[in-house]
Image 1 (cartoon, rainbow, N blue to C red):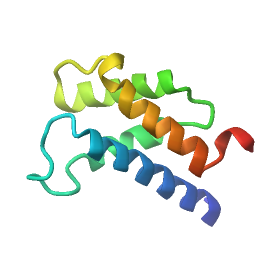
Image 2: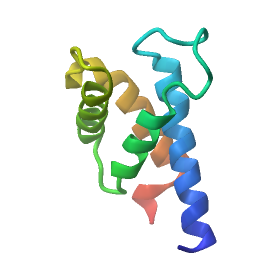
Image 3: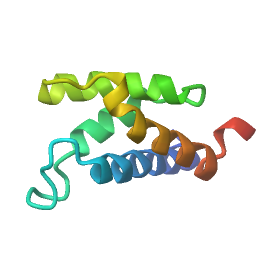
Image 4: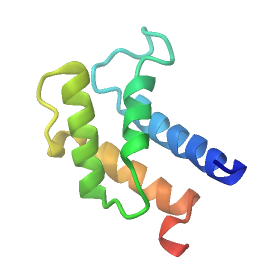
Length: 98
């Protein structure tokens, strides 16, 4: 893996983490450790590719959180976080322009 790819993967993780932490779907933050959602954020980041739509991101987030926490994590519940991640991915990583 090249340094460029590693840096890109790190940036992708940080974008996902930022928005998942802000979303805070289980209301665990700020009482839990700062890395509370890091496992989920990493799994989400690993599934994202340059062709993902906001809807596909919502599906990925839904699947990861349902597996990790159970409960109702349908796409609608995850759509706000997915749209924020999608927006930042396209702005900061310029995926659609490569």
